[in-house]
Image 1: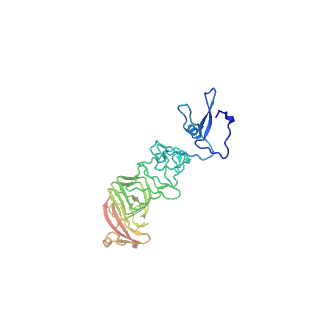
Image 2: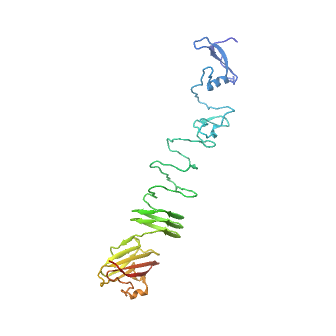
Image 3: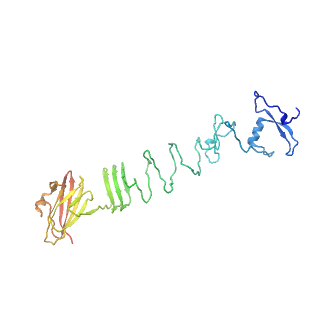
Length: 350
């Protein structure tokens, strides 16, 4: 067939099919001209557009665009969606059943995991209720980082222990409460200086090993359990009485200096099972003894003394009086609504 100009070629009809062997005419020749018409198949033209021709100096198309779906049909293609070695990433995701190009991210939903490498997020990461597992030994938060939930509780679980290392650990907005369901162990030096600890510790046992010191601390609440064990020194607050009302919710130990008969001391807010100790000092001369007595709430009959106490100074109530320049230490044990009292008398004081 003689060569024809491109303008002389007859277009294909509506019923014609462009197959892989369909021939197309192309003009071939140097840049300056004198072209000849050669044939090229559709497959050869597609191969040139996608792969180029390094021998002849050709190059692939700089861009592809269109309004139809893009498919790949290569029987030897590598399914890189399962490759997580940081090199063979699936930058183009292809459906393996039909070769349809579905995404360009490469990390949409890898088959066998994806090596995210040193990625930096530019917006909030939404896990869509999925779980983060096997994160390694450390999750590092920057200043102000937190874990929060507005709809339900957050649970931290570990088969051995969860360790917090920080100068200050706060539970709640203002140390509201601490609830421990199970054993609560403090092993080491636990010091609460000018602290505010309020709440409830509930569990099978509370064990404090080594030193526990509460200096100028405000510890309010309830410790409920089978056992409370303190190994080492434990100090309690000693409350100085400004009047004859002894508020047993403030402290277990109280003291007051008197110079005249003072009765009754009124023990209020007593908790069943509580032990209350009251030291009373008589600052008068040795010969000037004073009388005193105790009652619980409005009932003096709620304070029971040993019969032997009736033979001491104040035979009326059974409560021993205080000799001049001496101190008595009164101890009360609360059982039900009764207080059972005892006294150590005549302790020499300066």
